[in-house]
Image (tube, rainbow, N blue to C red; front, side, top):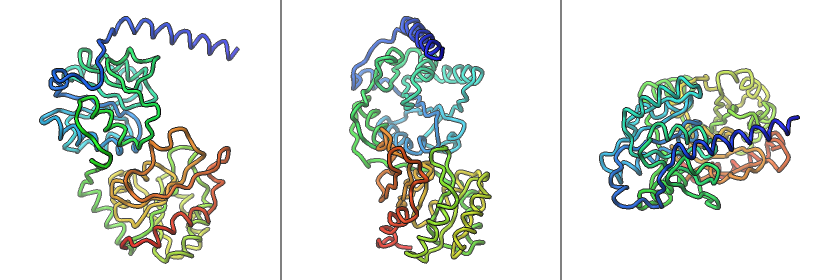
Length: 368
């Protein structure tokens, strides 16, 4: 019965794709765009309606476009979790907050059509259907650029085949966009960045002063995805192992709903120069805490990418290998990857493994 329902679903999708293919009828462009078309593009809409880390690794693209297309207007379709990161960013001229419901989509379609974009760039690699439809509704007559996929190419009039391109996401989004317009790009040319409001930085500094610490090893014990959740007992053991190789204080970062877990880590570790940072929902305050750290240990990629912004060394804790690991590795900073074996959960990692990975940063000449 389940297989029959699935076959009906696939048939419906093929039917709708056939209908939409005739409705949109997009004129095709080759990469790079011809000079006349490329030079006519002054207003660019970028789809980045996904997660916090995805937005962070995309920020170099804003500077790349602004540097090579003087006076261009950049609009970003952002998600409910990551829009705050770019709300006050001078490199971004418009922010449209996306929610996956019909009313939100229709409101954004109307707003964006009024802003008359010449080009859309879809950076959501695994949601081709919805973003493809929105691109056609929002930038009906413009260039619509996205990842090559034979099933969904009709949504776009210019695509890039990303198979066998094993590069970090920052280089991927900058490289494909540079190829679209025909201007140069090299890895490391632009680095992820954020602009921390003074109020957020001040709150972080006040809390750190109250804790009596200046520099510290930042241990993040929270994660947004279930597969990356690590037990408090393992984190407590990590703290104990870290005490054997460094006397630098360990500051525990945690989400507001993980207070009990953070306290369990603290009590299980013995509490020797191990402190809790008061939880906050302010992403910029968290960024400031990362900025002041010596190096970061985290199972959550959003914290990993915040560390990249401030050029902090990273010990990334990961579940079993995935096909696209290389997309999300820390960009242009020293990093150590501690990954669970295939078919093993992230809690199969050991405290000794994690501490050993961190030891290289303890022994390095990085200034405290």
